[in-house]
Image 1 (cartoon, rainbow, N blue to C red):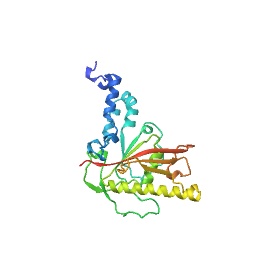
Image 2 (cartoon, rainbow, N blue to C red):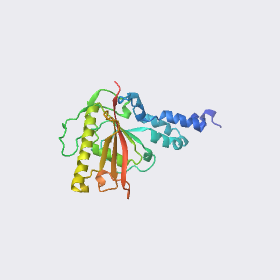
Image 3 (cartoon, rainbow, N blue to C red):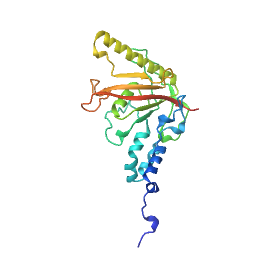
Image 4 (cartoon, rainbow, N blue to C red):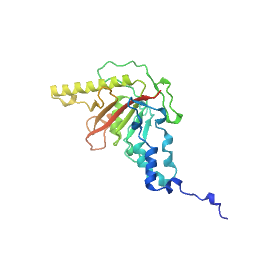
Length: 254
């Protein structure tokens, strides 16, 4: 006996549209998060990354293969792993992870550079975010996941095509101060290396601001494939040089 017509599988309606129109839909669906940050450094909670934004890739295999590159290069992935207990040990070289170009960090801890006064060990208040918990809450809570500057450098080393890291915080001034301290520390190490003619003092990263006094955008360059060691996050085998990503600081609207 033949099955009713509605039992026959049909291709998704989206695949019946012209390819040019589908590309426009993908561009609208996966709008890059950095482009939604206001000039004052704020972002609406509704713009934050959510795991549901990639559900379209699960509709069928043809849609997945057609849209995965656009989805992974334009979507900003929110980091919720605790690197203190689960360090990132392996470089995500395989697709689609190799397509990732932007990350969102919601628990950055602006530690001071070495030999500088350490901040209070008490966790500071920040915004709690989790893609699986629905809309973000602007209520300050204690940090549950923290990311050190060293771990941010490791992310730039690990993700080959990463060009933007969005740092969401309700302590913009404190984070900016921490990055200024890092920048001053880099300058001190470089001057010491030139004075003593000793390359051992040259830091494995460089940091400078991109927008003058506002200091909401910073450019971070890290060395890869050098003597930094595996613990610092080496690049691919035999690779030498540097990788660069922009750090974009922002807070939530309201």
